[in-house]
Image 1 (tube, rainbow, N blue to C red):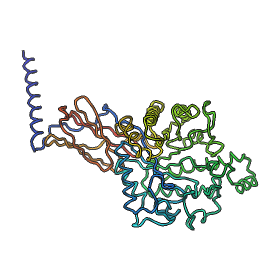
Image 2: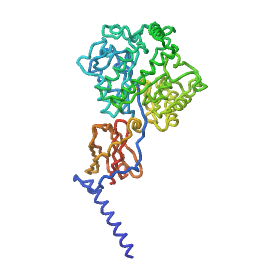
Image 3: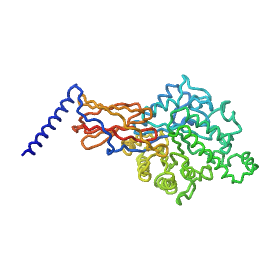
Image 4: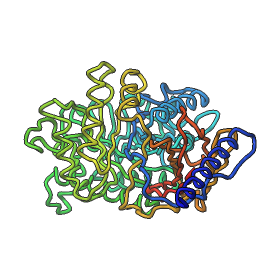
Amino acid sequence: MKTSFNLLKKGLLALCCSSLFFYSCSTSKKVSTVAEPKVQSDLPKAAKEFRAAWVASVANINWPSKPGLSTAEQQKEAIFLLDFLKNNNFNAVIFQVRPQADALYKSNLEPWSVFLTGKQGQAPDPYYDPLQFWIEAAHDRGLELHVWLNPYRAHHSSGKTITEASIVKKRPDLVVKLKDGQYWMDPTNKGTQDHAAAVVKDIVKRYDIDGVHFDDYFYPYDSYNGGADFPDEAGWAAYQKSGGKLSRGDWRRQGVNQFIERVYKEIKAEKKYVKFGLSPFGIWKPGYPASIEGMDQYNKLYADAKLWLNKGWIDYFTPQLYWGVNTIKQSFPVLLGWWASENTMGRHLWPGMNVGLGGDDKNVDEVINQIMITRGMVPNSMGAVHWSIAGLTKHEKLIKGIVEGPYKKQALVPASPWLDDKAPAAPVVKTDVQQGQLKISWNHADAKDVFRWVVYYQYGNTWNYVVLNRQDRFLVKSILEAGVKLNKIAVSAVDRTGNESEKMAVLL
């Protein structure tokens, strides 16, 4: 009898407390009926998946839409693209800042890009630094920004007049002319390697970037030189005269290999957390694996991309797998599986996907299928890079299918434990209840090292989360949502390399 009475007393007390809590929520007074925050590790985790798009500046493919736009017009276009990525749950942008040995940023090493102002060497007017603008705007939206550089292209066929500021005129000893009108820096030339490495180091040192990215333009494609061999006779003759024993192909590959290893080491010496990504042609050699046919990057572009992956000279590897799942001779999953088997150092394998084929049902299904296949085949570090952002912005059906499907929830960029595996401390969390709303606020002793925040919340038995950017310090949630009570909230901090802290939880 006594036990029954005690149970009844406890029940009445709980009912009174619950009634008091909801009564207080309906008044204008703040109350403190929530528990003290406690670190809790057994809560759900936010999704982790690299979701990026390329933004090309060469030939004004993506940004700016044409040369000579005003500063305000350029910035408006940039904000549109970054808002688009944020609103569709992407978390990174790969922005081309060096299309032809020039710069979309203030540089003492190379001239302002013709694709920016319409005249090589001419700064924006009114003056601003486009790269700095993109970095700050991206970070304010919780997006990583990776600078994309072409290491060897000296002049593109769409680059108009070659001015006195061009490396073609300033360093003719480094460049050769191709039959289609382009100029290319000789990858075996030490002066080429020194100059290009200095450009990378300068950007890493002066700008708050998250990654450095090279694409597939190592030695040029055959078509750029009318099918003829790369015109490096002078360098090859000098190498032989010095007693060099390598074949011409191995000599070329050695020059590229040395450069890739050097850039990786120099980036890490300056800022260890800055990721280095490479996006080579999707086929290493025909016959690897057995069913694959197509161009031979090893013997045509002199890019031994397999070696770079095997050696771990990169932090993420993005082979351009621009073919369909059912394209038998260049099948997306077959190639992805082969590259995964070569990822012996456990780096991120985030394939490049072609979203520029259109927005009909077939292509929407193809892109979604490739995302899902990648998740299944590379589950420990999921991700993809989409070529290019124009394919996403122009095809409403495509982006709708992606954001209502695989990208429905936000995702964090996967961590890179070989760069840093130490998670930040948990944030300090405060809560206030007023008029049926819970205000969750937080701070951190080392907030400058935090890149994102994650707020987890539970209505009834269902958990969800929202990823917020570095500047955010509070979030307001309703105590009741569709008649379901908010039971628990938690906040975590995420650093530059993707490490997530323990979660500071509050039971309501």
